[in-house]
Image 1 (cartoon, rainbow, N blue to C red):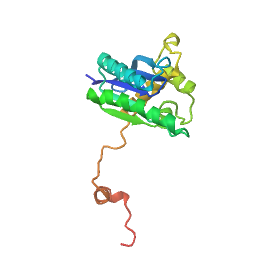
Image 2 (image 1 turned 135 degrees about the vertical axis):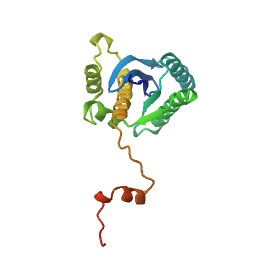
Image 3 (image 1 turned 120 degrees about the horizontal axis):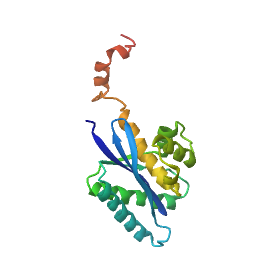
Image 4 (image 1 turned 60 degrees about the vertical axis):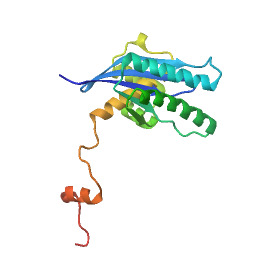
Amino acid sequence: MKAEKIILGIDPGTNVMGYGVLRAMGNKAEMLHMGVIDMRKDHDPYLRLGKIHEQVTAIIDRFLPDEMAIEAPFFGKNVQSMLKLGRSQGVAIAAAVGHSVPVHEYAPMKIKMAITGQGQASKEQVAAMLQRLLRIEADEMPKLMDATDALGVAYCHFMQQGNPVSDTHYSGWKDFINKNQDKVSRIGH
């Protein structure tokens, strides 16, 4: 019997935060749910943070994820926007950590690359690829792409789980050299 894992993906935002939930069984994944936390009508930035914590906690309580994957903020020119985005990301992470859910962070380019094979893919391309990969019906596709972005974060994490970088661990360069004699040339010896 294959182990089942529930992965919660979060696309942090200060106006709209996307979330997507995947069930992973071996090398197969299926979407359980996706949606957004819409804060556009909430004008107080601190109440928005409270809403993020409350809603992410509710999502965790409902789906009981084994892991959470979150998109790392990208570095833009507007420092204030970065600060706000970092706060929203931090509150979502705090909700997960408060429920003992391990958190994994992925850069936007890595997420796009994992799903489309292109690091500069558009939101529309990511959504279309997820629709095909996860066999999502057209009427199930959300109006706001923050939800598919979040599902993309979860799917990226699922893909990383199936493709570990290496099962071999090294304690340092000497350990690497000792374990890889056939790959290391000795210059000067």
